[in-house]
Amino acid sequence: MKSNARLFSTQVKLPCTLSCGRDAARKVSGTAVRIEPESMVLHLSAAKLPFPQVGDKVGLEVHLPVNFDLVGAKDLSIRGLIMSVKEMADGARQFVITFRRAQFKDRGLNGRDPGRRKAAAGSTGELTM
Image (tube, rainbow, N blue to C red):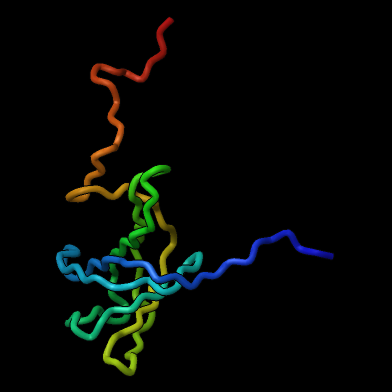
């Protein structure tokens, strides 16, 4: 019997921003290399010191590819926990982050999406006839 399921890979190469430290004040750029339903693997280069540690809570924004003809820029946003850290041969680190859920968020200038729709002024949400 032939399966109609499409084959896909969890292997990716997407830019991301990791927020860590007190009040998520420290932001570090990296690359998401694998995305699974409840975990994500990312690489941070050797120059990005100090690294987060196992057990640290972090925020992560994965910057998704953009097709402006169809939709605006989106990020996959998660809050998670660093489960493991592995040092690579070139000095970079590979992190495994677990999370419960991820959200898609609009990405724009200074964290705001310039194309975001706003409710009409004076709109109460009630229907009138």
